[in-house]
Amino acid sequence: MKTEAPHILLVVEDETLAEITAFRLELLGYSVKTVNSGEAALPAVADRPPDLMIVDLKLPNMSGLELIERVSNSNQGEDEVWIMALSIEADLDAVQQAYNVGAKDYLVAPFDPLTLESKVEQVFQKVGRTV
Image (cartoon, rainbow, N blue to C red; front, side, top):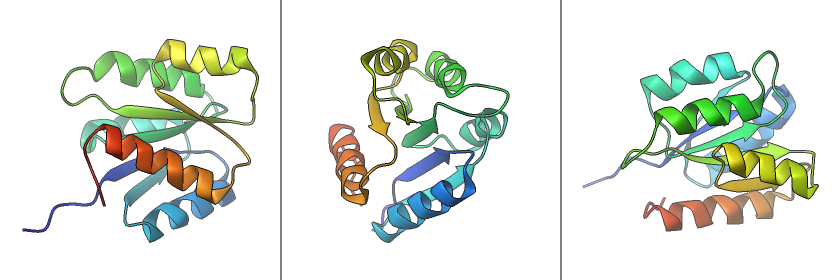
């Protein structure tokens, strides 16, 4: 019996960063959908809840923090979406804000692809999913 690959929703406005990150994750065996705004992410989550969302905190119109909070508040319980914040901000206040609204991990950009790989693998180990 073949199981479906873990699904990642990547919410990043920067097209180049989105393409590179999605490509790397797909090479690792993950199913990846990319969107470039919070407004596009909400229906994507409703349509197919991801196993992991990676959310850039700097998004147009709706901030990444607002998106994380909205998804966290609406997806709780067994089907809770694991959210990793992505930001160029490395200071403790920015990290704490992301955790306060519902992020469970934080990735500072620019990032080493091996760091991304390690963090994503750790998430799926915690939730009991593997590629």
